[in-house]
Amino acid sequence: MGNTKHNYRISSDVKEQVLKRIKEEGISVVKASEEHGISTHTIYRWLTNKVSTPTIQEFNKLKKQNQELLALVGELTIKLSQAQKKI
Image: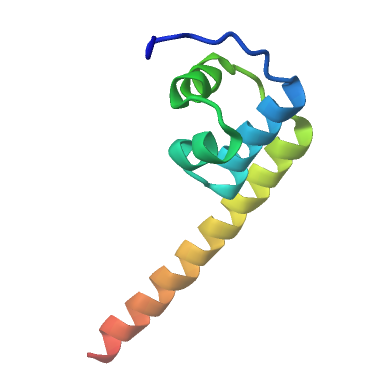
């Protein structure tokens, strides 16, 4: 009896909310599983089955973040170089 499998349909809204929280908020699969009452196996299956191309908005956001990170790395490299020259 302990191995009874229940086949519940989870709405696409809930599925998207769970995946969004994991991807954007960075919560763990285990925490999402506990909070939403969904097995970790199901969530991992969603994550591996979800093959999608990013939207233009997602792409532009990632492109902007990449540019900001490259600028930050450049600034830190210059500061490090200047600090080493002072030594």
